[in-house]
Image: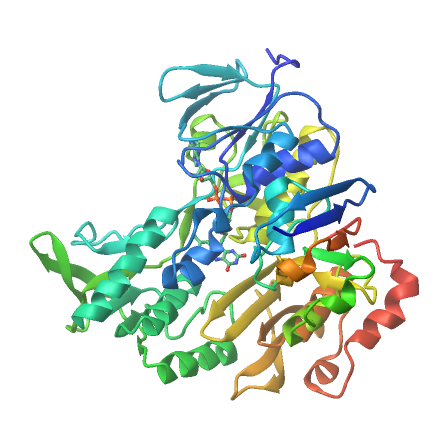
Length: 107
Length: 422
Ligand SMILES: Cc1cc2nc3c(=O)[nH]c(=O)nc-3n(C[C@H](O)[C@H](O)[C@H](O)COP(=O)(O)OP(=O)(O)OC[C@H]3O[C@@H](n4cnc5c(N)ncnc54)[C@H](O)[C@@H]3O)c2cc1C
Ligand code: FES
């Protein structure tokens, strides 16, 4: 099963083993990773699951949907080129080792 | 009588309760923390219950708000299936159904709301259903499927969010649906006519029968099961099941019995403080006193989460007022409805986008200032408006209505001045 590494706003790192098909948001919420709110529960409606995808993973992810791109326009923390909504990132074997960082604010 | 070594107790293990606990830890509270809920399921999200979950009830873990590991990591003790029956404020203790008592140093109330019951003859017949919990959603999902298979109609009483989401789901499952709404249009309490009309068209296009100004007088049935719904104009609507979606009642029963100030909801200020300094409250159970004195009752995830943060901070003796613009979302068919701000008291509405499709936003103004925006499949408008409202910025009605005007430019111009504290 793929492993995902989360970097919390304070800098602490947590690596979790997630079942394929799980969202990066769900993995974080279930394990209590700091720095994520996920108010809408993965509906791509709140942008409180914002993360920064760490190198070299950005290009390996499927591109964001139109909705995700639009939601990203006004996230609470700084939007960067590697900003994604973690509820839209689905873990699969090819993403073993994926690493994301949560910003210091989500709302 | 307050024992400062006693735990902080939170009553209600829902959206607000979980957030209060989480924020207490984030804000540095290191003492004992107990989250008490009367449901059997670990804390879960309700929004999917009237949406995805009706179509395909899945694994319960997909609904969970925070996993068990998350609670353990944050040293949040969870006591489920436990009803709190009274608050003894003089002794700073909670009483439980089994006679036990627990002392608290501080107390948070997050008891949520109850689905408003239909007070009419026949309302207690079988297959008259309302929607609040996982079990309710399961029962409605089964009823919709049964109606689809047996070719019997579903009658929804109430054309608000929950009723309409259920109607949309029922159509997707192939059941015939009639929505009986007492007022002249859908979602009339919260949206402008142009938004109601857009949803009317969409629901009708999907085959939902909409009846307005319908005064339901009684439900009829046989063998204990509902068979029809009667209205004051003499019509009778056959029903294989009835879903009642006529709003919620804030659950302030514990608080009211303990003498806390309540007015259809536990009265709280912008910092989620109740009339007792050692008790805070958050979420659907509250009625919030705004700066201008008005009382605001909101039933939304964001309200539960933001008030919960305020409540946690208040219990630690500090202030974190909740002033962000309220927002809400609802899914019906493939329309993503996102609302931000409070449209109450608007005197002008302009639209941006394609009203017929529908893919547009309604911008609500009061004396020329933007107060709220409803977006139908216009995610960008929603996100930009949210920021504008949070920063106290307003386009002119002409700018809002002009699709070529870049709303984002107002934010860019204002950036240096507001230094982005929101
Ligand atoms: C079907 C449905 C769809 C929704 N869709 C949306 C949506 O799309 N978008 C949105 O923003 N909001 C939506 N909402 C609203 C949102 O879910 C609520 O606003 C939110 O759950 C409120 O959280 P809360 O913690 O205040 O209350 P709840 O989540 O209801 O939690 C309160 C808990 O306290 C427990 N409790 C009460 N009294 C006691 C007691 N005496 N002892 C122990 N436990 C007690 C209750 O059983 C409950 O578990 C929806 C709600 C429903 C029901
Ligand atoms: S959880 Fe709301 S957008 Fe991801």
